[in-house]
Length: 123
Image (cartoon, rainbow, N blue to C red; front, top):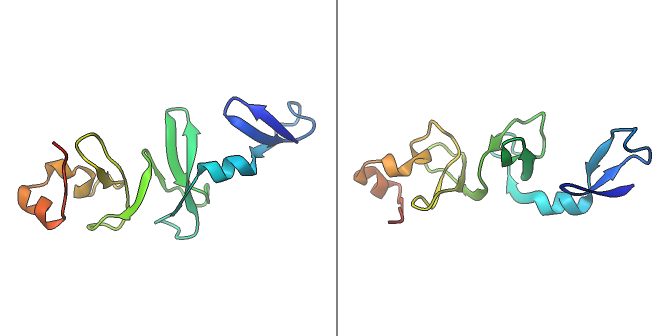
């Protein structure tokens, strides 16, 4: 049975709210999918989800694959570690989703490294 909720339409059991079974509607699934392949399991796609700290993106194969990033993935891969690149900030157009990678904070790279990895920082 399709119902309207706080976060959009969802499919629920006919005994809802007594029965707690719910899932996203097909419309919501299409809307939340980015179409970008997961770099961890190589099988799922990255989908937009809502958590207690706000919006984030994770693999559609959760809980088998725990790949998750905070901001929207761009679809590009990091030149150093191969992880997904994600949207950056005002001065950093995109950055690596791996926190230990130097491309996570490309503004901290030396000018030679920025040139080597073709980093374009906004002023």
